[in-house]
Image (tube, rainbow, N blue to C red; front, top):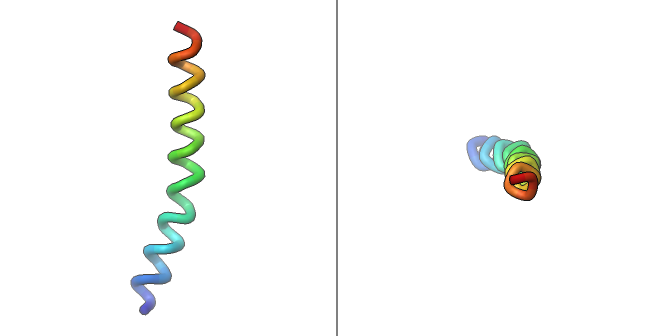
Amino acid sequence: MRFLILLIAFFAALVPAARADCVVLLHGLART
């Protein structure tokens, strides 16, 4: 059960970072 909570917390932290990376990548592609 604790593992599941850690997994959810990990993904909750990971998703905004991944979205930020996508935004940066899209801005980089738009510049070229």
